[in-house]
Length: 301
Image (cartoon, rainbow, N blue to C red):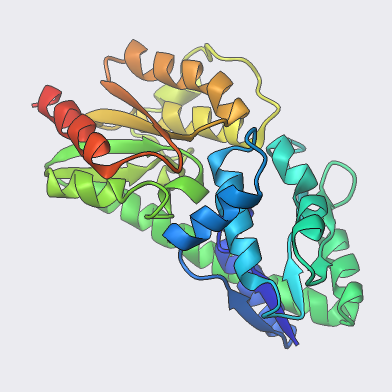
C-alpha cells in the first residue's frame, strides 16, 4: 500500500515526521516531485482566484499524486501543542482535496486544544489498520528524527552567525523558503551576491547572547496564529545577534501575512535593521526579483 504526500504547504510543517511515521508502519511513501512550472500551472487552473499562491501550489502537487497511490495524506491542522491556531486555509484542505481528486484522502483532525497528538495519531493508525503499539513505536521514531533535524538547524545557525559576512535573515513560512521554485531561488541569489542567509525558523529562542528578548517589552499583540507567535519570538531572539538585514517573503493573497507584515517590519526598523518585503505569486519574474535583491544588498554596504 502506498501513501502519497504532496510536497507543498503543510508538508513543510513536519517533513521528516510523516515520511518516517508511515514508513515505519510498513507503508510505501510517495512524495510529489519538487515544485516546477507544470505543477504550479495545474494548481492555478483548478484554484479559486481568492486562494493564496501557496494553496495553488499545493493543489498542483495533489493533482500529480492522483491515481498514483492508494491514499493521499492531507491532515486537517487546527491547533498545535500550545493551543495556537494554524492558518484557516489548513482547516479545509482535506475537504477541498476530496473534490479535486478521485484517490481517497487519508486525513485526521489535529486539534491539540481538544486532544493530544498521541491520541490523534492512534485514531489515524486505526484508519490504516495499525495497532496502538505500532503507532506508538512509529511516533517515537519520527520524533527522534525531528529532534535530530532541530539539532542540525541549531548547529547550522551558530555556524552562520560566526561567519564574517553580510547576514540576511529570511522571514517566511517553511513552505516558501524551502521550496526553491516558489521563492525563485532567493537563497541562492543572495549567496551569489555575497550574503549569508539565515532562515528565521533556525533561530533558537532561549539561547540569545544578552537575553534582550527576555527583558524587552513586547510591542506586538498576543497572536492566536502559531506562526505569528513563533515569528515574533524568533525575531526578538535574532536581534541579539549581528544581523545586517531582513527580508520577508509572502505569498500573494495570504491574509495572515498581510496582518503580520506590519509587526515584522516595525520590529526590524525599530532596531535599525534594513527590511525588504517580497510578495510572490505565479507571475513573479526572476529578473525583477534579482534587481530588488541587488539594490537591497547595495544599501547594506
